[in-house]
Image (tube, one colour):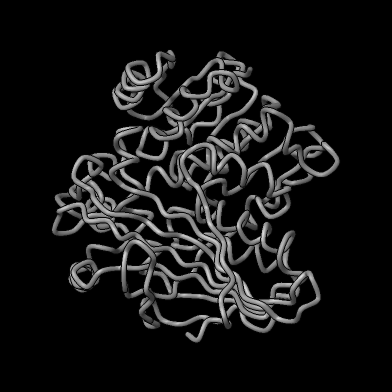
Length: 407
């Protein structure tokens, strides 16, 4: 039984805190803080109604390290779970270092002034966390997160080596909006409009954004166009699986989404450089995010399924030659909403955040030889995490394919 402090009050946080409330044996004392306390209060009220668990709430600017330090010292948690924006990763890590508290997040650091999300900023904290005897677990969402665990489970149980890896993220849901994003609009659009990068023959190869498209038939969704993008787990997977010859990340987008995004780009609404408007500096993308539907409001109207997984090809563990395996999860938007009041994209990230937290609080995942430091999901034993996925709403399946992917 442990005390946990969650930072952020969006859809992912709502799912995570609800699931923590459903597991009081692990999360005995839950605290939730965000910039807008009323959002935390709404989550706390829902958790109380659905689970009977009390959640204490606070107002915090997570970029203010002294304020974060004061809050951590007040709450005295065993773990800080960062479900705020990626911009806040480093300040929250600084606060955890100063207070000697473990840290977890779901997405790597990204500077505000450049759409460039990489792990090196957070990896640089490893020695300081090790010296402090505390652990930071990076990327405990679905992608990154579960996709990395899927990959390492395949390497532990099916493949001696992994030569090729494709991560396929399909949201087959329909929210009924003309244009909306299923997670934070600012982060979502920054990711999509950035140049694509994939790992090939020992280096990253860059291509224009949304320039590579293939169709794939997803189980319980159907045929969808998916686009090659860059995603942070490619950086960590290529580091921890050195034999990788090629690794790619794919995400599905409908034609209407691409049409709206193209128009918004053409009129400058996806820009991240400040412009003057009525004497004030504004960031076009931040303004756009403010007027778009909030992801946490989409749950009630969203129908359909997500289907996220990895396809890996390599040398079989049993010595039978090269084999290809596909491991994935299918999540129902309607079931996610019924359980937590949130749509499936928030659910597929919030549940792994809860599971990663449970792994740390139980000591099941404790870093290298139980010492402190900064770690990615690929460095952990995948088996207990995979078991909890099945137990807590994200069951997975694995099958052997007849050949490597043809795209």
